[in-house]
Amino acid sequence: MTADEAERYHSAQIETLADAGADMIAGLTLTYPEEAIGIARAAGRAGIPVAVSFTVETDGRLPGSHAELDEAEELDEGDPAELAAQYRTLRALLPTATVVGGCCGTDHRHVAALVDAWLDAA
Image (tube, rainbow, N blue to C red):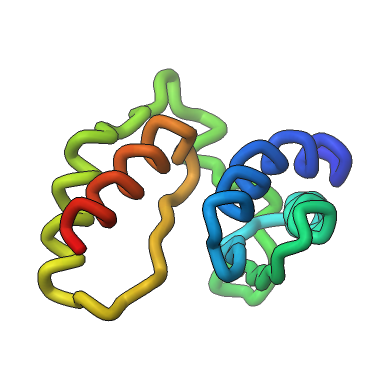
């Protein structure tokens, strides 16, 4: 993915989170610079602070892509309802925590479910 493609890909979610009052965006365990650049650009355009970090292989180099995901015949989309239930539990255990999020594959369905669960458990 180029930096421009990454910016377009992440923009909707970043803009939604910014509009909802998020304090900042974090892009963690990134595997290549272009995605970090795209996330940073999208966050800048949305007017929200951003932090990015990378994951590295055991040799200290960026992996470029996750081979396991690249070679997978099908990807698990995850279960938004299960994620929401886990967030309800997390909120009960950490009532003052304010960091929420997902990982690769987290989309609007997951974000909506976790925000609803987080707010319901408050």
